[in-house]
Length: 270
Image (cartoon, rainbow, N blue to C red; front, side, top):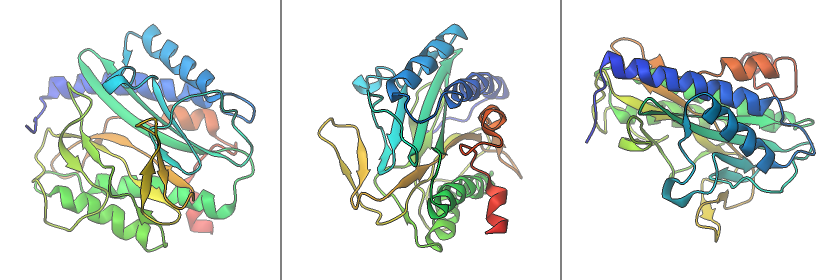
């Protein structure tokens, strides 16, 4: 079932999304070479609980952590672990918060230290593709319009769009209908209506589109072991212009003027 949320429900999701954005920022403060990814997970879990929420991912289908932390060629669903971040890594942090009965979901990929210009462009273009998808999340369009916008933009640079993993509806459950692929054809798929809440989350590979799942049943890697980037916003479908409910504002206040910042504006200079 596809739900159309009331203004009161959307306001509650926005409150959840603010806590989520601040939790991301608390994690971003600590991202540096030498820190174990499990330490980042502890910080996020504590912050979310201290602010009245619960981590959406913890225990979801037996997932063991509050964050999905995916490093380099891991696309999504990486486990926090004893792995210590290294200079040159890219680190995707995916997090969800449930507060007042509603979930919000967002992701951001950080370049740590000396990351090559080519991979920094991958991150910036993946981030930009989120907003291209968001532009199409308006009443009267179709889900395929979102995927088409993301796919046509990213593939023109030679990147690949992951097919097996998609965005989704968000609300009282973490994953709701409809599925929101990052590829597609204009004018196809479920019709978008005001009040639908969508997680738009491009997962874009530097190399081939194929992925493999590790034996842990969760971790998804690129088939060619080349890097992958992941950015995500929770969005309300509106008439005329979509409303982004999550925010990168707190992340970018922390990462401004550091190597962790992914600045779309840099693309105009390269």
